Structures are given as structure tokens and as C-alpha cells.
Image (cartoon, rainbow, N blue to C red; front, side, top):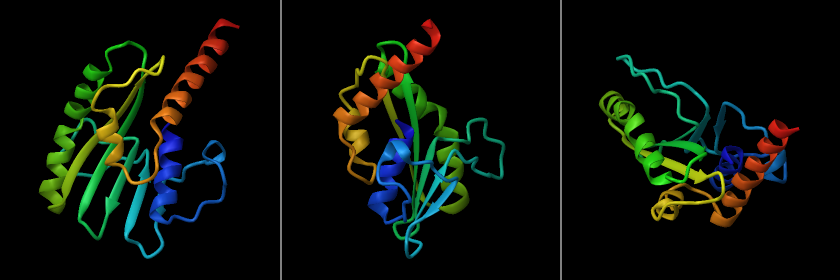
Length: 158
């Protein structure tokens, strides 16, 4: 699901993509849009002056024009309480958002993208996903999460 988000973000921001479909897409650690307006970091550690325990979100979108950072953390939750998991993700990166704002004076936002293993989503899920650049269909993200869960179960049970 994370690669799917990354593919859609790259497509929307004008990053040159090699593959036509998201499931063939292999994210690079750093992608820059044409013109250098947006930088997309994949699974990269953020260097800060102070030690921050959680400094490696799944996707970071740095918009150089707007002066914003978007920290996206994705999870497929094994339990039904996706709302609790969303709150944990926001709290997990609170120190990092404060540190980024202090160091570079940019607006920083944490966006948790949490789907239950059976496709359950919270009421605020659509709001979070709409903040991410790109065309993300909720049904497609749910489908990806469910198929991933089925794949994992098949591997474990065989």
C-alpha cells in the first residue's frame, strides 16, 4: 500500500516514472519533481540537531515552493481499532515535527494512513488521504491492504 501511495504522489507531482502500474513501481530513496518544486523521500531518516527517537517515516514530501513538510506513515493494523493506531502515529512523530519546524521554519504535518487488515478505516481516513497529493482511491487502498493480508496469511499457513 505504501508503494501505491508513493507511485500516485510521484505521478501527481511530475516525477518521471519508469513503470506504468503502481505494483511494478520500485520506489527510489529520493525523487525530485521536474523543476525541483517537490522532493519525495522514501524510508529516509531525518537528520536533526537533537536526538529524536522516531525520525524515519515511510514517505516525506517536501514542498519547496510552499515551505511544507508532510510526514506520511502507513500501517496495516491487525486489530480493529484503527483510530487508536492513527493517534499513536501522530503522537510518535510529534517530536520530529517540532524539531523540523524549529530547524527549518517550515510547516510540518503528520498524516497517518492506517487501514485494518480486513479493510476497516476510520472516519477521518478520507480527510487524511485527501491531504496527500495524487489521486488515491479509498477502495483501491483497502483492496491492496486486504490482498496483502491474504498473501501474508497464505505464506504463514502453508
